[in-house]
Length: 374
Image 1 (cartoon, helix red, strand yellow):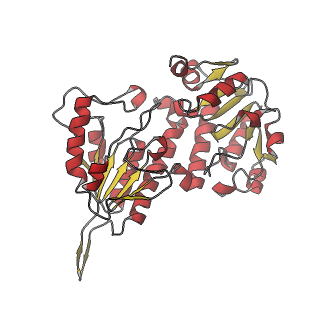
Image 2 (cartoon, helix red, strand yellow):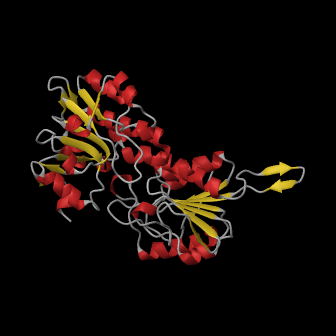
Image 3 (cartoon, one colour):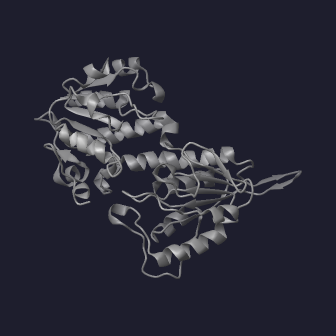
C-alpha cells in the first residue's frame, strides 16, 4: 500500500495533507509513504522532517508512481496522477458542485475521488471532518484579523485618563467558525452578540457568554438542513431577519459573517445600505468571500472600504495558519483512513455509510447521488 502526497498547486494554498506525525502513523499501519519535495515548506515542515519520520521524499512523478492512495488538501489535477494505480483513491477537498469538470476528469481517468467536504456530520466521523477543523481555525483567525484592522482596543479599559469602551462584535452564522469567533472575541474582551437561522444555536451562543439576536415572531422556521448544516430560509424569515439585523448592525464595531450553504453561493447577509448605517472605522470580516460572499461588495484577499467601513476576507482563511491547519487536516485524513484499515488486506476498506457519503467517482463513472441527480 503506497500513500502519496503532492505539493499543493492551488493559488495561495499553504497547507499540506501530511505531517511527519501522520506519516509515522501510516507507516506503523504498514503503508509506504512518499511525499513530493518541498510539499511542507509553506507549513513549516522540512523534507528532512519527513525523511526522519520514515517517508520517501522525491519528485512528483516518482511519488505518484504506483500510488494506491493520494492525499491532498485541494484535489490535484488529473494530469499529475498519471502514474497512480488504476482505481487509485484520492482523498482531498474537491469543491464538487463548482468544479464539475474536475470530477468528470477523475471519473474518466478511472480514479476514485473521495471528497472530504462530504464527510457526514455523525458522531463517529467527527474526527474526520475537515470542514470543522479548518472552520475552527478560520473563525479564530477572522477575529484576530478584524482586531488588527480595527483602529481601537477590544476590551474595556479603565484608566486614569478615562474609560475605553469595549468593542461590540456581532457574529452572523453560528456554525463551527462562528462559535470559535464568539469565543475568541470574548477572550479579547469584546461585547459579543450573534445570530443564526437555526434556533437550536441560541443555547450555544449563550453558553459562550454572548447575546443571541434572533427573529422571534416567525414561527416554524428552524433553519436546520440535513446533516446539521444550515439551509435556505423563506422570504418571510429573510425579511424579518433583515429588519432585525439592520437595527442591530448599525450599533456594531466589528461584524464577522460565516454563513455558507453546501452546494450554493453564500447567502447575502449584509447589504450596502446596512454597511452605510455602520459607524466609520467599523470592520466587517466576510468568511464566505470565496463562495460569493455574505457582504455586498466584499472581494477575496482585498480590503474594500465602503461608507467608511473596512470590508475584508481571505479566500483561504485557514491557510493563514498553515502549520496548525495542516496538522489538523492531516489528522482528519489519518483518522478517516485508519478507521477502516483492514489488517489482512493492509489497506482501508470503506463501509457503506461513510464510503457512499464521500465517494464521487468509481469505475469510470460519477456515482455520488448529489451529483448524478442535479
